[in-house]
Length: 169
Image (cartoon, rainbow, N blue to C red; front, side, top):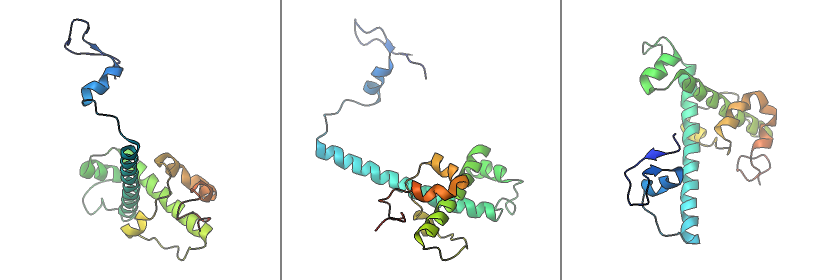
């Protein structure tokens, strides 16, 4: 992005150049300051939305994993996973494989947590979306992608206050 953009001058002292600090005025009009209660309410809404995104990613990851495992692209006439993802969803090869990485990582996290918590009951794949929604461990996508090579460290990465933590009461 360019640091300056041309805009029609609005007055005699306006040079018509718009700096980054001016962008806020263009995006939307100034609002009155928030009260602490309003800021807390807005923050709670943002937190809820972020939790929804994490759960959605977990559901998507489980579905991607299952679709790839059964080679869903073959009966649909695609020559590869990449071709399928490009045609059906408009995503690049890198994005298609990143989804698989996240799916594998979430599965590894889930397995490590189950072992650490002593709740592992089966090595079979749980494909229910509701089970995938429970895979919210508060990790970033970057951390999730790094998980498969570090499954021994996974339990330490899970926040102690998480309901999935082996140390949670």
